[in-house]
Image (tube, rainbow, N blue to C red; front, side, top):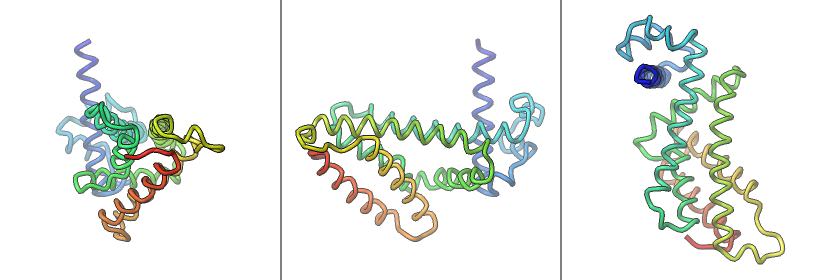
Length: 206
């Protein structure tokens, strides 16, 4: 068991090095030799963890997605007494990666997305990450609707539809901030305006 834990720890350490290099040079500019140097391990250690560069990149993509999803869940569990609407707002805020401390992570995420557009294997872990985030938002939207008065309306909002729209908006705002079309403050305003409209449709308040 200790050997297995060490192996997984090393794989994650290597994934972090991949992310740093992908941020600097893009996924295509990442080599196993450079990753070994950045992770401060031997090239052989990298090759024992990953049989190819593609396998290493796939793991790194999944690692970033898991890190974002886990951070969302951690923020939600940190304040168990918060309302369902507030929890939904916190989740959307984390997914959008608008804060300065998440800017590098946002660049890495979008670099992988750009590469995934021409690489089906790389797209698969990204779809898995998006599905996990969407499922979380569906649950939060449904909980917010249950806590409000939306269930008494003729046509209550569809949690699946609302979650998809919110995820797409948050993801798009990440890009707009990175390219300088919007400031982080402007993007947050757009996100909060959308959430205010969502809470109204759900018949709840933050």
